[in-house]
Length: 73
Image (cartoon, rainbow, N blue to C red; front, top):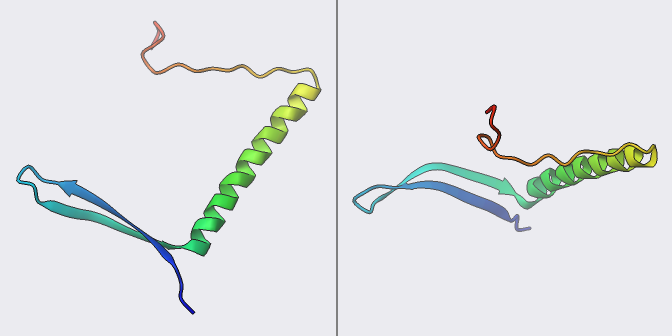
């Protein structure tokens, strides 16, 4: 049976146009699916917590600013 893998290379292009391979990352599709399922579970848990807070009448604040946007940063 064939086993599929995802291979990613992190490369650096030098000034002369040559490339250097800095890192090679290889994962199987099964490993990738497992990682994505774990991330999805974390997102679902977070959304559930927000729903619980909102059902209790509590609101969450949306905070979005980049460092340096505020005067005190």
